[in-house]
Image (cartoon, rainbow, N blue to C red; front, top):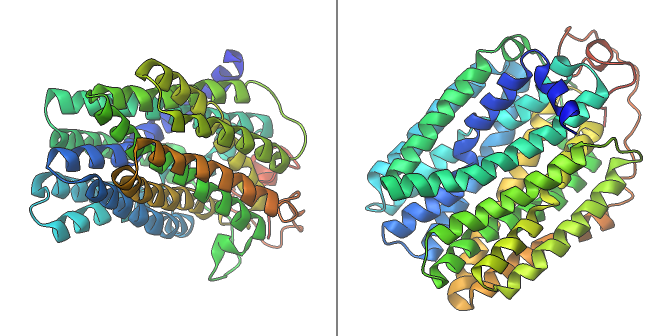
Length: 423
């Protein structure tokens, strides 16, 4: 297992790109947690905390595909770093202004969200030119998902540590300053500076003209909804047990479970269509969310949270391959950004729904939102099985592709490897 991952990390630029992207995404990966904790510390209700987190998520959902398309058109450095700085300034405004003016608070989190740089999609666009082989790229997708879970494991603990040492406002400022440094590391790298997108067919729908991609996005909206609801439900569970640290441990356990699952998934070569494999993984993911409604003692709940996370990273890694198979040529960054967007919209809806579920019902009700999200994701995949049954074979290229571009699959990687197919 370790040898395969080390082979990827030894590739030139790979470790820097992975680390820089991970650090650069830290503000986005912890924003919902930080916003909820800051709002509660300022005296805001669960509903307000959920609404602000939802506003951030929805703004991110709007910004990601737009910035992703801009990256495909203009390159990574001209888009990624300015966006990272603007996003950090928005969150800094939120931390300084607080809840004294709710319109200003909403405007600040919306600015931070809409300017969130599409580092995640950008990294996946770079992997083929950095690693050059299909098996290494697929393993990198698993490593990418695992790295995210490291962030989701360490991120909540880092936020709660900063809150305990200083304040929720300080946590917002520090996390976003670190994120800007991560984005800077990525855009200064050679692969990011020299990357160019493949020629693309002019179409106002862009990546969304692919039916298979639309089906996948529909499913991952509900996966995002499940995770978003857990963000608020975990805070409510911690409040029920009188210890703020419980929340950090629950989120860390969820990330640790996903870390273990992702390492196991990436350790082997998978055969067969990834679309079929994704249905099985999402079914197991949904099954893991349902026991959270029991809300047992803290040790048992921590164990259930870890179990609930086991199939998250495999689902994400497998979805990357499905995106590759269905994204129209020249839209790879945009396609991955749409996945991030859909996930973010689902998370925003989940956080917005879980807050009232706690206040109108109980903590168990908010965890029930997560269970329902997992079941709905599986239902979408089952209902769209015909659309997702394999990927269309791309026609022969009709235009010369810039050498080293993310969609130059015949020149950059082994023959037959394609991650930007015509839809």
